Length: 198
Image (tube, rainbow, N blue to C red; front, side):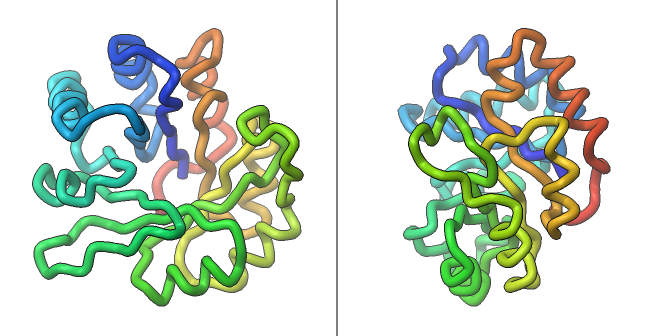
């Protein structure tokens, strides 16, 4: 599985252009724009739909009410945020975790999938040591729900994450800030099987 996550460092127009160009290579597109209002996120989803990006491919960070109202694929939340627990909320619930203990707790709380990282060194976490493949293997073995590896993922090391039990990888700048985002997305796609578990 390939999750592609917006970086928060591009204009709306640039983000939309790249997303439309690369979405067919991705399993899920995450809108992770901390400065956008709920209205801007709704507008983003509307624009994606106009360009034939299905709602079932779109994951929103935070804003569970939007996810429910717009019938999107999932809401992705920080480790410290509670999941929505209402009969009307039928979308998947994902969470970023940084330890086995947190992973086990979030699984008990109802997470459908987890992100774990940062697995490799990355500029976005400069000065912070990578958690590495060994910790990834331990964490994937500790839970029964899918775990997606994030942080410093490249087409060359993506396969090693799957070998440690990850169901897929998540990529931000490796695609959105690549010189040729389409070529970058294809390279990640080639390194991973499409479809399957989240």
